[in-house]
Image (cartoon, rainbow over all chains, first blue to last red; front, side, top):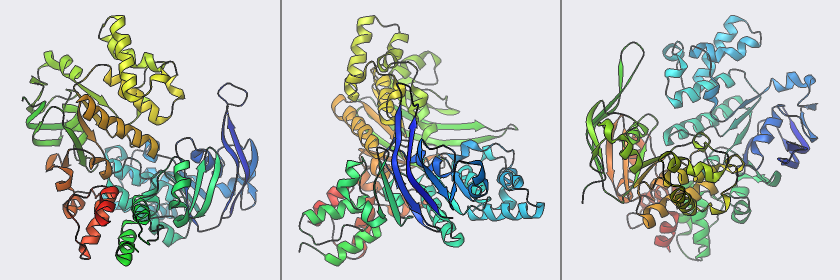
Length: 282
Length: 276
C-alpha cells in the first residue's frame, strides 16, 4: 500500500486556551515494503502522525491518502483494514481469557472461516516465538510482561497487515527482550515484506531495524532521509532534543581528535570495524 | 559506620490462585552503606522491584529481615519512620501526582506529616530548587512534559527529606533529554546532598554511572561490584538476559581484534580518550 501524506496539520483544543499545533504542514510518502523510523522528542507530533496514518484522527487541514483513498473517511475501510497500529504498551489492551481467544479476536471479526482463523492464530503466535500448544490456553494476565507484549503483537499480526505501525514496541522490556523483539520485527518484515513504521526515541535501537528516518521537531519534518545520514547528523538531532546513537558519538569524538573515520556507522560492530580500519590519527 | 540498609536471608513469595506461592526473592543478603549509589539491574521478573519495595517496608518479608537505618521493617511500629527515611519514585510520573499545582503537589507529603506552614514552605522551595523547578511553583503538573512531571514526583519525595531514594525505572517512559535531566538530578542528589540512591534500570549506560551494580536473576543477587568489574563479564550478563553499555560493547570487539585497551572503559568519552 502506498501512503501519501499531504501538507497535514493537526491542532488540538482549537478555540480554547489550551490550543496546541501538534502537526504543521507535514508531507511524506511511504512506499510498500519500506522500513521507516519516526523519531522526535516527547511532544514532537510522532503519535499524532501515526494516528493519522491509521485514520483515527481527522486532519485540521491537509490529507492522508492510503492507496489514493482519504484515510479518515468511511470509504477507506478496506484500506484501513490493511494497516495495523500497535500502541505503546499494547498488552494493556488485552482483554480475552485465553491467549488463543485474544489472538483470534481480530480474524474472527473479519468473518473468516474457523480453520482459517485457527491457521492465522498459529502462524501469528509462531511469528512472535510462542507455541500454540504450550501457550494457547494460558490466561494472558498470568504471563510475564514480555510474553504479554508478544501476545498483543501476535493479535496485530493475525490481521495480516500490509502496513505495520509500532509505537515504542520495546518500551519497558529488558535488554534481551528488546533484542529478541527487534530481531523478530526484522524477520516479519523480511518474510512478509510488509511496510514497517517504527516510532521510537531510542535511536541506538532504531538503527538496527530501519533504512529511512523521519525526524519530527515541533510538529514539522526536520529531515527525512536514509537512516545513516539522519542518525549521524549530530547538530540536527541535538536541535530536535535527541542524541546520535552512542557508536556515532564515539566516532565523532575520534574525528574531532583528527581520525579520518566515517561517522555514519550506527551499530557497535560497525563502529568497531571502522576504528580498526582507520587505526589512528590521520 | 552502621549500614543504611541491611538485608538478611530475605525471602519473598507472591500468592497464586489455588493456594500456590511463587518465590520472587530467595535468600537475599545485602548491605548498603550510607551515601552509596547502587544500580539494580536484571531481566523482567528477576525480582528487582520486589527487592526495592522491601527497602521502605512496602512489602513484608515472607522470611528473613530487612533493617533500614537500624529499624526492622517487620515491626509495624517502625513503618512510618522507615518510610520517612526511604522515598520511592516510580516509572510513571502520571500515577504519582496528586494536586493541581506543582507546589501543592510537593507540599502534599509535608502537609500530611502535620508540619507547620513555615516549615512546609521551606521544604517545598528547597525540594523544587534541588530538581531545578523553582520557576514552576504555580504551574499545573498536567501541563508539564513527562520529564518535568517526573522531577515534580522526585521533589515530592525529597520534601520528606529522606536519607535514601529508590528510583524504580524512573526514565523508562521519558525521551532522551528528559532521561539525561533525571539522571543528572539523581547523581547530584547523591554527590552533593549525600542521599543514598538505589536506581533500578534497564539501561546499562545508566547503570554504568553508579558506584556499585547489583545484577539479579530469578530472585537472587548474582553479581555485585563496581560497574567496571560487572561490565567486564559480557558473556555472563548476556546469559542473564542483560547486555553491555554500547561503549563497553565496542571496546570488547576492539580487544577481540587485538587492540590493547585499559580495563574499565564504561562511556564513549572514556573509550575515545583511551583510543586517542
